[in-house]
Amino acid sequence: MPPPAPERAGLAVIGAGPAGLAAAVTAAEGGLDVVLIDAADAPGGQFYRAPAPGLGATRPEALHHGWAAFTALTARLGRQREAGRLCHVTGHQVWAVRRTGEDWTLHLVTGPDGRGGAAVRARRLVVATGAHERQLPFPGWTLPGVVGAAGAQAMLKSGLVLPGRRVVVAGSGPLLQAVALSLARAGAEVPALVEAAGYGAYARAPLVLAANPDRLGEGVRHRAGLARHGVRMLTHRAVTAVHGTERVEGVTVSRLDRAWRPVPGTGRRVDCDALAVGHGLVPQLDLALGLGCSTRPGTDGSAALLLDEELRTTVPGVWAAGETGGIGGVRLALAEGELAALSVIADARDGRPGRTTARVARLRRARRRMRRFAGLMGAVHRPGPGWSAWLAPDTEVCRCEEVTAGAVRTAVDELGAGDSRTAKLLTRAGMGWCQGRTCGFAVRELAGGATDGAAPDRRPLACPVTLSTLARAAGPEDA
Ligand SMILES: Cc1cc2nc3c(=O)[nH]c(=O)nc-3n(C[C@H](O)[C@H](O)[C@H](O)COP(=O)(O)OP(=O)(O)OC[C@H]3O[C@@H](n4cnc5c(N)ncnc54)[C@H](O)[C@@H]3O)c2cc1C
Picture (tube, rainbow, N blue to C red):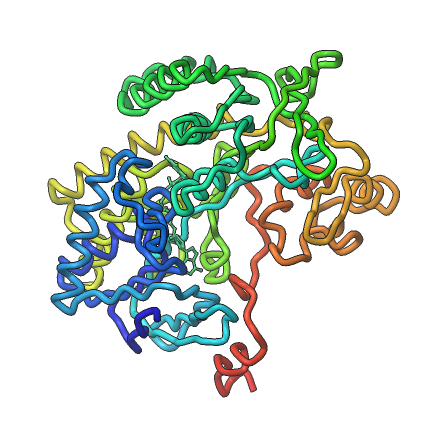
């Protein structure tokens, strides 16, 4: 049974990944009364995802690097919990947040059928809801055996399972190298890592690279590890089709031009029984957008929260940290969580921005340095405009509602849809269970509307809830 949520706290932190954990622990150590809420049953978020307890894993650290930092954080979490300053509410998803006087009221659901729930009031809020994977569709991407690249990593870390025996890893972004290496180390054969961009583009920003030697070193270690496991690294290429009847039997890998259009006649078949594919991560902004927080365009083409140096959003009383402010990796998430908490502590003390102590100055410097690297990474791996040339008319773009690329193109070319919202109304693309999280980017690009860092639609609910939950949460003003 997940622990019950308290009725009130000084600070509510949503998300117990690296950013949220760092924020919650720092704030509690600074004397605040904190509630940390996460949909998962254990702390750690995506990066520090541990094997499910029932699997009896004896060495969870074997699938991780930086595990010592995580155990140090969870030890601090334990101490704050025991001291009664921090309540970690696991297995609860926040589905809405509303203003109630000077407080925020967070509405939570829990349980297998989502019927359990609670409401927590808090004076201040840190949104650390992380990111989800960006998928670009292509012929065959809905066949069994095609999984998200980050999803494959998550399956391995939490379920200790591989998506197949011979797995092609494809898409774009440095995460692919970590995924390919984890799969190979866990015993999968990885015949190729197919990267749509090229790593040479990083060399155009030597100062940013020089300021982030840890990222450079990580890249070198990954490349060496991949070479040791015989993983071929193919750049400026993409998987443009998946073959198979019941499940994946092979993929076509094509060379791409600079705009990511496949070069005719370059397709080569690679046999495999699984494909792990992803084109980077996208900030998870449902709750923040619902609160009215403004966004900025990221260099990778997605929207990220607009934050000041103290990690305040544009909504008073709401801070954010980690991937919600733009995709940047675990170390950046940890630094931002700590910085956000220090700002919250100062705000709670006298309602003013905090003093720039040596600790704050060091964290800000680290943040600026890592954010510059994140900007470079986003620009290098941003999907090229020619990716949609991979699509066939019958390729499903929205898999929830089974809407094809042909249907979206008809809505645009023949019915005059000039933006994704009209395309959605005409085709139902983005109206299914995932509410456009998977297909939103692709539909926006196909509809030809504003795609450059445009914020996703604002939704009143961050996840599906039952009518009874809605009715329970409704205040007298909603009647
Ligand atoms: C599937 C996946 C796998 C990844 N694997 C790797 C990897 O192997 N190596 C690597 O370097 N990077 C990896 N990353 C990136 C890495 O996770 C991030 O850099 C880092 O974890 C960011 O920390 P964060 O705290 O911002 O977000 P996260 O770690 O994503 O934490 C966000 C937390 O918020 C919770 N949450 C979100 N919405 C709600 C809600 N409404 N209610 C309650 N809780 C909520 C989630 O359950 C999650 O625990 C992965 C990302 C993803 C999406």
